[in-house]
Image (cartoon, rainbow, N blue to C red; front, side):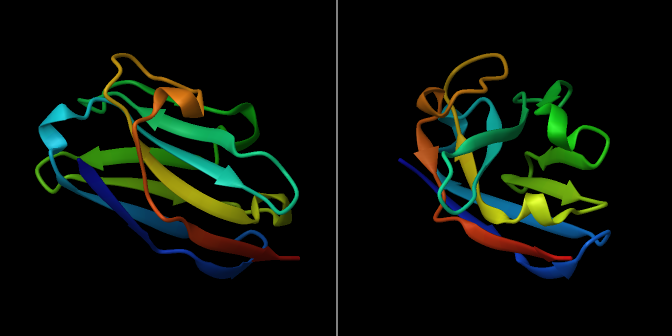
Length: 124
């Protein structure tokens, strides 16, 4: 099993920045890709960003390209999501996820482990 714990959410004004962190523990050697998803009230969970095991390859949903950056520190078993130029429509619960799949999975059913989520609220 792999445990994931997110942190770094909060309330920020539009145009501001937040950095989310996700610390993994347990059988982390079994994890390849790491990703971030989000779920706004009344909406389905959506893919935000993912990173390959090495961090050399990343992929983003179009709505966050150029504003969000995913990175990972494998020595610390931690993945980050730097969010800049935040917009009110970025408001959601953000979830960290870990996948045993190779490549950069973008569908939630490709991820094996999930964190509890952290709330991000962007005020206009």
